[in-house]
Length: 215
Image (tube, rainbow, N blue to C red; front, side, top):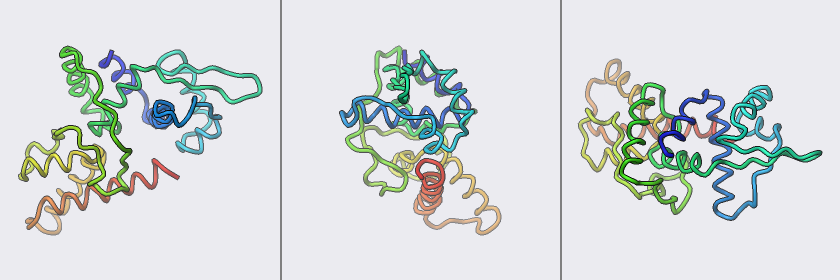
């Protein structure tokens, strides 16, 4: 079920979420037929996520069975298979740029997942192409007109809010904090608020992407 799988992800520690997001990226390769299965070493997970080896072993103990089935092989790397409902939940969150959502938003997101579940809606269709903050915004998925609640009181057009909502939530949140600081300490007026917001939010997204998502 969508809501339970969303809860399973949101309840993880931040470092465990890093690992889940990495395995999610690999599971997409399996879904797309690029890989037959996920077989990676603990060392590889450590390298790609920046987590310690101890943290990775704790993650394996915590998730084995659900939401990740881990098959150990003698003398070979283990096979990781993500539960299909958990995969759909991460996909559902990804399409809303909520994979990095703050704890304060957890309750509202779970309620939204429950509403989707009640309506009989499943995860949105897989994006036609992968998008990362380092790529042009024009290449981002366009399947939905989601407006992040953080933009509710921002005085820009609905179209501009939809455009900015396609950035990851952590970048939106940090970008808005940067904007508040700028208005208070540098200039109390911004002539082109949409262009300014897009600039600071995209900068946050690129920085996070470079330092944490890819090496």
